[in-house]
Image (cartoon, rainbow, N blue to C red):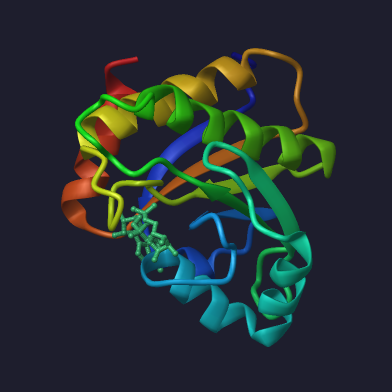
Length: 172
Ligand code: AR6
């Protein structure tokens, strides 16, 4: 990994972060929902829903990009995490693809700073320890190459999640 790239966990509401891109844990309709998706749509305003409607959905593991509209972030990268079925439906590979495809879009749009929520670990039920290991490993792998990214934030919403991400990063 390049020495200059910072990867760290924080506890925050992702909609408040002034970064180049925040990632949304969306569903395949891209038309909003609960959790972090609902919070992002509420904070970005109705223009985000309009932009998402034009995208026509997104398969699990892929990602799409829109502007951030009323958010402090310039872009929202929408990715669709897998629903946890007990590790029997390629959940780990699909979650890896979410992080890879989101970073790819961020790099294509010359982003320097990006914040991820803990994709799939809320309504979609992915065990947080496994998800954090996948998230941190994939980000390290992508940043091992030359990229535009200087800083990656793992934006946690609870003290417990923050501790899990701290641990996952410390184990690397
Ligand atoms: N900032 C940061 N993290 C948040 C925020 C926030 N404002 N709000 C919630 N989280 P979830 P999923 C955390 O359920 O599991 C939606 O309805 C939350 O505590 O948002 O990928 C979509 O439309 C958890 O740690 O996403 C889909 O239908 C993490 O974000 C479905 O839920 C992810 O939880 C996607 O489920």
